[in-house]
Length: 142
Image (cartoon, rainbow, N blue to C red):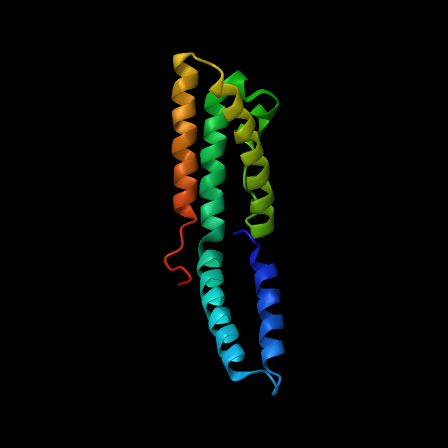
C-alpha cells in the first residue's frame, strides 16, 4: 500500500494524541477522529491482504519476464527469483524491482511490431489491470 501502512499509522497516532488535548474544538476533534477511524479501517484491510497480493503480483511479473526471454534483457534473471521472505517490506522491495523491470520490458515491446511482442504487450496490460484490481479497497472515504 502506498503510502506505507507504518507511516499512516504513525501519522494517525499523532492525530489521536493531538486530539486528546482538552482545548481541541469538539467539531475539529470529531472530524479528526472520523478520519482516523476510516483510515484505520482501510489500513487494516490493506494490511490483511498485502502479503498475498504482493506474492501473487510478483509471480505474475516473473512469468511475464520469463515469457519475454531475451526481450527481458538485463532483467531476465528476475524471472527465476523467488519470494522466500514473506515480510511485507521485503516483498514490497522485490515488487518495486519487478515493476521497474516490467516497465523496461513494456517500453521494449511497444516498439516491436512482431506478433510475439504484440501478444506480450497485451498480457502486460492485462497484468497491470489485474494489479489495479488487487489494490481496490472494499470501502472508500466518502
